Amino acid sequence: MITVGHTHTSDAVQLHDLRKVHGRGDRSVAALDGVTMGFPRGSFTAIMGPSGSGKSTLLQCAAGLDRPTAGRVVVDGVDIGGLSERERTEMRRDHIGFVFQSFNLVESLTAAQNVELPARFAGRRVPREEVDAALAAVGLAERARHRPGQLSGGQQQRVALARALVTRPAVLFADEPTGALDTATSREVLETMRRLVDEEGQTTLMVTHDPTAAAVADVVVFLKDGRIADRIVVDSDSDVRNGASIATHMARLEA
Image (tube, rainbow, N blue to C red; front, top):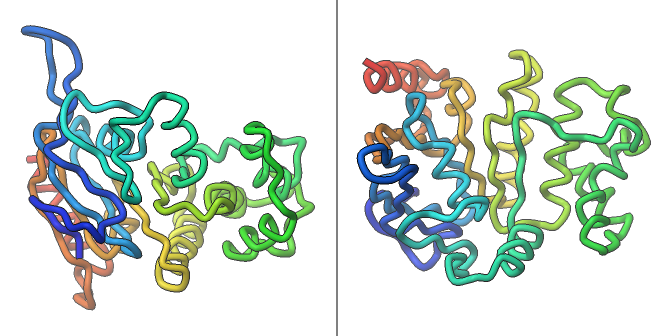
């Protein structure tokens, strides 16, 4: 279960008094204001909050894409604040997976070639069996030779998901992964992400504005004004599973 206010050594990601301030002096704005939180290995956490609540900033700092103003971020046992830029790049490449709203696929390449492309840029070769395994994990084993234009939106996002998973990352970070998809294809992608957590133990942190998407997670954490405002454990309660309770919490935060 996600730990708010403290962390455990077994957590895949630990945030310690995380702070991020934009601007200076009277114009400074605290995007994150002392967030301490732990994310256990094999868990699926959704991060929600009103616009400007700090949810995307939290994801970017936790994933090593942005440096916090203060506090510590520990990913897979490594304090990434003490790493050089080169070491941070290697950490993101080898231990962290990313999925964004835009698929960022190269139209002229096949699904398999898109999956291995980041490693190619890094001067490494990914064995074909690992590429095939990543595509199989997202249900696209038969689509390896298809180009993005031959795939549906949901399939393209699953190729992006396979690309993020091919290195077997300790943590998968997803920023609005279904934001550009319709309801049916969103469900398809979310079911794949849920299965990867349940069957592969893939630790996943997802920022979303969609209560229905958040209901796929184990825990939903709500941010407001850069602080943890609330949390919901997603269980068998039908109101939580269909997103109703989550939507109610969001409405209260936005009021």
